[in-house]
Image (cartoon, rainbow, N blue to C red):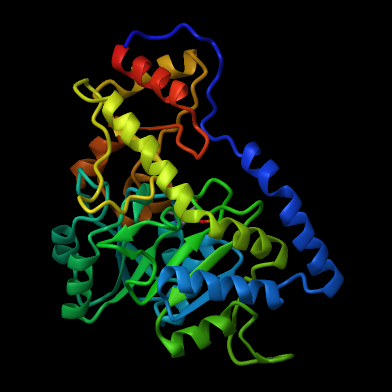
Length: 371
Ligand SMILES: Cc1ncc(COP(=O)(O)O)c(C=O)c1O
């Protein structure tokens, strides 16, 4: 393949065609919600919760305002707070760690596996101390974390396991959807996600009845009945307009994930035998490819080339969380977590979304190969 001189931009994400396809059905459902006057929670949200729980193989699913609050509410529902430590990954969007800080607990960052970009279970085990209360793995970019090893650790040390599945709706670990594999699983429906809505939204799954009841309370001001409050909670509710859209998109989710997997395979083939290292995937499939993130020894030069050709890309993530200013008080030093620190200099995410055309993928591959 030779690099193309085609100047047509390729966006990082193209949401418009999907919006156009869903618009009529979605608007009809919004009209129904309008006619019923049920805009927040209500029948549409309950129906989505039932359908999402069935898809994920969870006993309960609770719609909330966004993925960040899905994490915060889960931590609260599991009684994690001041004085507690939660082990998590430094290679994720900040919200994973922010939620831990927001409940007054301390995030403990450990190094990651360079192939999966996810928590390294051996590093997690080494960080377990008396104050450790939970492990919070992230299924980063849609790649399931090593849940077998992490669940075994959690069981052995009596720790809670909270999945940050914000980027991984539709990802599977040994055939089972992620999100229902620990004590709580947290999803974001931010528009760029595999299952995204057209606004903010989030979901929590749990198989525990008591945790479910606590979450229902926490998302609605800690209320146990109208105007009666048992504890300090949140205003963190999903609305009917987003739930209506999510129900429509859930029907086609498997197709959308399969399409992402097909695009990833084409990238993998197009990038074989060059300096780029394509992302790994579990041998039994299951990667949902919310992002397609490769490694490259000259990442910054590659990025400049893509930018010059107006090909969308993203540096996820430029700085590991343990070294970010917000965590200065935790005392981490450069060099302490070498794998993630190196990966932050090597990783680059390429466009991936249902509808990305073969000619576009091939053009991107040719450009990467020529770098
Ligand atoms: C890994 C991860 N966790 C949490 C979140 C937070 O989700 P939200 O933006 O819906 O609050 C995101 C969203 O970008 C994410 O990627």
